[in-house]
Length: 365
Image (cartoon, one colour):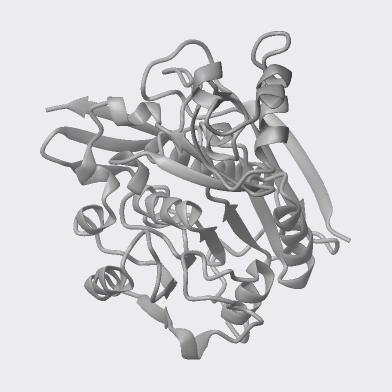
């Protein structure tokens, strides 16, 4: 059985300002046999609706550590708590709003001691109605779902922490076997991490990454079925109010600024409603070392891939097995943490390394 660890250490400084030193949780699993020169590192990045404490990710950390001789790393990254399901919604209903739907006795029950949201949902679930609500996010500059640079830097910080632990303990590992595996927005963050550390990763496994987060330009809508009632919850993220830099967050623009050295296995469904498989294929063709796997109906096997939609309804464990089957990694024992510099029309971005950890600095032009 793998050996599992959890750390609570300082994370990357908040590039948006904010107050105080940030800390975050890092989780990693080490192979039961220990670390040797063939041991690699796997960074797992979940997207919306999942996190490092999700059962599937706990299982992947444990299984992959032993099965593939990997140290499997995850972290609780910047703003991820705002990417989950609905926790608190605005419910501003009056008796008049409900009079055409519920009976008089039901309305009295709902408003008996002031408006009771739980009682409203309980009674409403009996009706075939559509309900539109808005999530109360309570995001601030200290912590919000930025869908980009801070989230990528947290992941890079977590993996470099693990590298420092290995080096401080005199452990030799295979630095040419550093992998990033993500789903949806998590896969997009894998690409961002690779751009901010172009000499680190040897393989990215991409399940349905978008080229730029859709929720930068429009709200996220989450649909939930409660009995007969359908609830549509709107998440309007704080980042949409900021002057974000699309040139650094759009993968097509960003990957035109450097020579990609990482092998990429990109899987994308033909009915993905968040990004066209044709656009994704074009992106993959435009960069080096990218293999595009178009998942059409004929590729849906009911085992690894269960649909052609966003995320492919994939079995994450079997998908990793599919990519890793018979794959070999040439041994290398040195990591080149070279500074990175990107210019856009708005800003200059630099990634430097202080005491072995990445630090992103941004200067307006």
